[in-house]
Length: 283
Ligand code: FES
Image (cartoon, protein in one colour):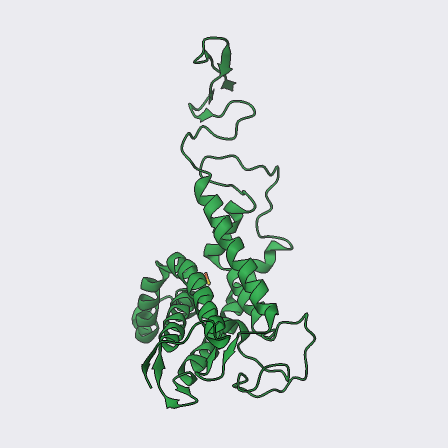
């Protein structure tokens, strides 16, 4: 049973509905209101939505631009175009050859890696929480009623695809290896071995990408899941312990790597188009 309370409003000109109290003593928002919360509960979901939208727009635009992705002098390749496997790629940017012919303009040059990376992030346990709250309002925040009448969870299409996350994790490992290879190759530019600010940016980016990939919940499960007795599997136990330490930072890695991906791409874009000059530290 729910009882509702009315009170005089501050102007004294009428009454407003107060919170209703259930038989169990729990307070519920008055009819028409979504929450009793008076703090700015909408701010975190709003910032999350803005952050995700900014990255999606930037990454989409850049992936289709087909310019400013390879700096021929310093051998910097942006992760948004790696691996570049088609004849449409500028000379030098294809570290694994060009087994694929020309691609029409509506297909991104990194069409092999981008769908897997997108799926990896979309099905990530952290990002799910982020966009379920900030985009789908399911629910938008603690103690705030969600607008949906029904909840079917991840038991049917399309959300049942979220369960494929572990397979996207394997693909992400391969792509991170490729990004690491690109970053290592960038130490050998046209002048031979050298180090520039771009090398440091590429390197920091892949280190953080490894942090994000290895801190994945699926990775934690792969290393230590389904074990009944840790003492019989000391190597896996040790790996699981280390990955568990990374795992508690997964949200931070998720956001930081969005930033480093944009920063890395932006730097390669600006250097390769001659807008700025790479800061050389050695050679
Ligand atoms: S990448 Fe976030 S849980 Fe796997």
